Length: 255
Image 1 (tube, helix red, strand yellow):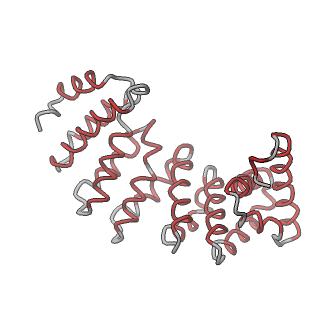
Image 2: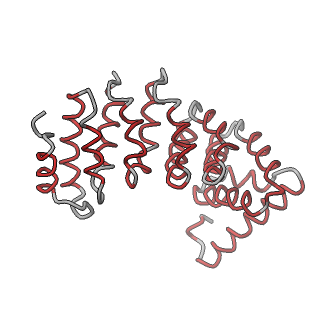
Image 3: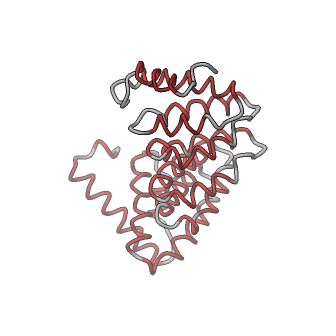
């Protein structure tokens, strides 16, 4: 039976059981039922398993090393779902202790399957929200990687931090302004739009863009910012016309 076919009470009991079994199996030194949960076809079962990893890491410091060692073993598993769950579990740990799990993301970025790679990006987003300094420092190492998809994924991954704190990611985005790959440039322009529409963000983004040298890229970004203020008009702090007026004050419409 799928996770959301269960009643609320049954789901709560299952989540508690997944965490309890994880603790028991770590104490015994070998995962059996937990490994099956990591590989479950139901994405919500896998989610419950990787959330349990984060909770146990915090609640049971005596089990940290065996937990990390177990994740090190399973990140090499032949089933991509297991590798995906491991990366997501590392992302939960990375919210509080990025240095201990950094190597999982180094490996996951180059996984042969897109699901673990996507888990890296999702983990960057959730870790960057609450533990930005080491996560953004790590992301910066890959901004000029020879693989264009790595550059694009890093750009995408740091977006969520920028929605509240654009000043934290704008210096990293600036390093991509002359990227020669269309997919990277498209993602960069998209991210600049996404970090521009909340309170106080447009001014921060605008002032930073004025320091960029690639005027063609900045023009694309300005168009996207204006469009975002229409598409997200129910959420944006400014109307599209107010955003245009603000950009005009800084000469951004005359580029």
